[in-house]
Amino acid sequence: MKQLSFALSLFILFSAGGVLESRQALADDVAYWGTSYGQVWKNSFGECWGSNSKTTDAASACGVVEEEPVSMLAAVVRDSDGDGVIDENDDCWNTPTGVTVKSNGCGVDSDGDGVPDHLDKCPGTALGTVVYTDGCPMVLARLEGIHFAFDSAKLTSDAKSILDGALGSINTNPGAHLTVEGHTDGTGSDSYNYNLSQRRAQSVVDYLSSNGVAASRMSAVGKGASSPVASNDTSDGRAQNRRVEVIAK
Image (cartoon, rainbow, N blue to C red):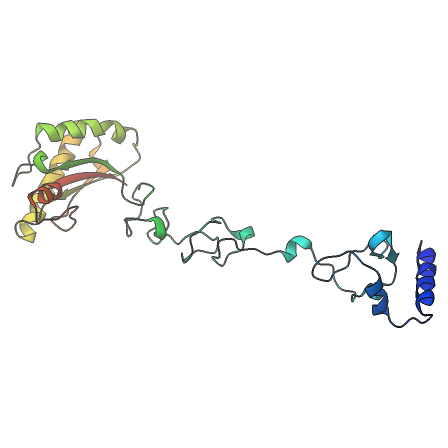
C-alpha cells in the first residue's frame, strides 16, 4: 500500500505540472481527516488518513508537524456554571452565578450546618445544630403567647399539650441533644427578661424530664428579648416573642 500510495502521489504531481513544489502543496490538494485543532488522524502504521481512503506515510506531507497526539476529550474543558471549577471536578454543577464555591464547586458553608451560604436563611447556626433544608434550626416544639401568662413561667394546659405532641419526635431522635430556649418580649429590663426566660426554659425541661426525656439530653437557656421573631411594637408581635423553643442539636 505504501508503494502504491507513493506512486500515485508522483503521478498526480507530475501530471499537474511535473514539479513537486512543496510538502504543503500536497497537503492542500488532499483533504486529510483530523481534529479542529489541526491534528491529523493516523492509522496504526503512522499513515495520515485522507478523503477517498487516501493515505501517505510522510507525516510532514499531511500539512502538520509531528507532535504528541491530543486527546479529543482532554481538549474539551467546560465549566458549565462558570464558577471556576471544571465540570469534571464539579460536584455542584448548577451553582448560581456569583456564589463563592469550594474546590469541589459547591457553595461555601460558613456555619458548617450542611446548607451553603447562598441557601442558608439562618447563617451562624451553632455547630451541631440539626437544621431544615433552609439552614434554620429544627424546632420540635414552640410555645408562644398565651401559653405563658404575663410575668409567669408556669406551664398552661395548652403548653403541656404542645409538649406532649412533641414527645414523639423527641423520642424518635434519642441521640439528639435538646436545647430549650426561653424568650421574652421587649417589655422590662434586660436582666429581668433574662431571668424570666431562663425560668420558662427550665419549666419546659422539668416537664419533659417528668415525661421520660433524660435530663442529660437537655439544656435550659434564657435568651431574654435578644432574639425576637416579630415586632415588639404590637401586642400580637410581643405575644409571639414570649415563647419557648425546643431545638434539636
